[in-house]
Image (cartoon, rainbow, N blue to C red; front, side, top):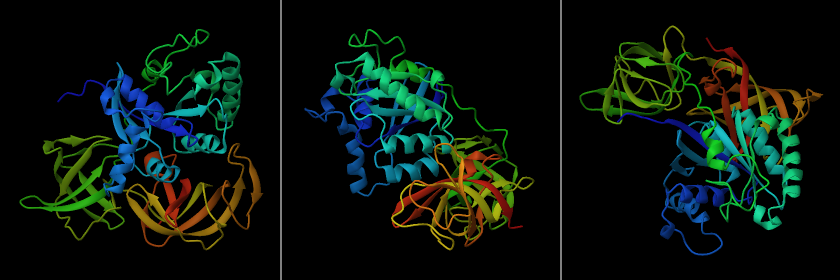
Length: 413
């Protein structure tokens, strides 16, 4: 099957009840992905779509995000909806849901909320460089241009603090419930001269595949297949893997020649970023490698950190974070407990300005530079060198307590 359209991952972010699910539902409805009769009657008709997700969760199916797809003339989008703030952050950071662009949904009746700010900051921290702002629930204010402009200014000032440029961003007045300005311009907002949401999505630029970076394939699972041998499975994050290449798995250091690569039961000569592949490496057995290991070329092996310096933002922590705290870091497919060795600087999360050197503790809402030591060897890369391998989520007590990125490391070897 030839892929004709480029693919993009799209996140919907913003405060919890500002109508993200309704908007996504309506987008899918108007794009013809969902048939009208699938929707239940009444106020929450569009939430139905995203609630199917909740059922899956309750049945124990491990789909954390509503991976709904829809097409615009130019792109095929996968929506990585962000229902629960908690999972959303972890998913957004650790892999498959890395979004290429985000729609920030802000409700006109509530305006900018703490979560709006947090999500905008997170989107930036996570390397989402393209943003569209959807100002929702315009029907509640009779499609008032004045109220729209006031909120547009507020949101513009907010996103400026995290280095987005408001004049390069579309601010779209919408009603997710009524369907205004989603697939076509609405008669209710004759004063609005910009694009409808779908047209705005169509103007986004596709991410360049990071084929020129060193090869990195985090291992998701390892299988034994009769007649083939040991087959690690993972998504190529960066670089290109070809048959015949010599690869090494870090931290264990097992290496060998790539004998075969397969995707969707088809044999490939090479795999590129975004490809989910199974591959067999001569001389590497089932007990040599495991989930969380990372494959790279032997001449540019993945970095194993003895300790690393990170910039983090504390999202939600019931207490305080001090030196000695050892939560679990989720980085690509690895999950490793890491100990905080030093709290070096506390920063203002919106501006990045240093507020305090060597603080005694960190709490919810703080951004900081910290030094961390993994309790066992783990692969992580400097964000400037291989951004895809430099982000992580910190989890403790069943929730994502912080998010961050590696800015420097001390190699273990």
